[in-house]
Amino acid sequence: MCAALDWRDARHYDRTGDRPCRWCGRPTPLRDEQRRPSHKVCAENAMNDNGGPLPPRSGAAANPAEHWRYPA
Image (cartoon, rainbow, N blue to C red):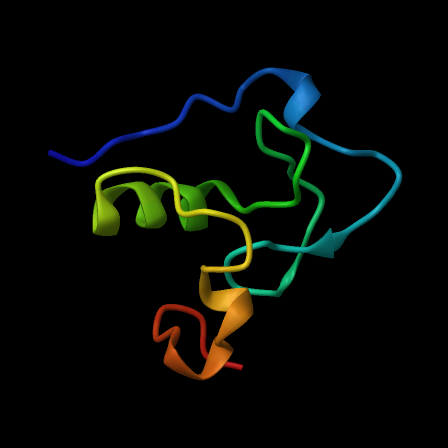
């Protein structure tokens, strides 16, 4: 089953500007529960692909060439 995150709370949006997503490296104004930049879909993919969130610097941002979901 696909996990879905509920990011309707305004705290997930950072009005100060975009920062690189921790998973794919592309800009996003969204922040996860720990206030780290993250697209909702990237976080869901990480959860579904690996059974839970990946540790920092282990996602696509650590090796963008292997991330097929968001081509440059």
